[in-house]
Image (cartoon, rainbow, N blue to C red; front, side, top):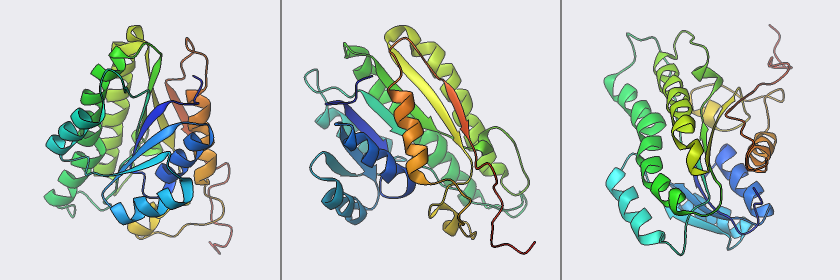
Length: 240
């Protein structure tokens, strides 16, 4: 795909790899609708990235709000080319300590949110004469279960299954579907779950470069899954 003049939607765009995705796409000449709950953060990003970054205050768990926005924003004369389902969060803990509220929050954001938006964008992509691409951001936690992240595992395993089914469903409509499975990235994700970042974690810009590579592959070439990890994941400052 040639990214110049393409229209992209990126969820979870107000921080971390979502912001990095928007940055790299705009560098390539795309226009990005950046969706997130924090409008102030989105406006800060717009002040840095320019008018090709369009802030959209949105909670992906609110399917009616998504329906209204998509209906208002897109038409047969203005169709999306790229959807990056990136919004996600984690609540860690033993299964007997994990609250129903925390479970529901992860399922609604990490899994339902992807479905809510994708189901609205796919019909528009089917109208697009060009090839389109949906990229779902999962996690290595979608490949391997571990203690204290059972809820997060469940949602990210779900993203993998959804992505694989979707790529087989849409491949003959000129719509690519890829799932990315990143390991530890130096973002505020780890601050929110009580861990610290360190220099051996992957950098958001490097992960974003991988996303750009997926998008720029030839039209009849699909990388449907890609796993990314730090070569050495250990904290270099740790004494353990």
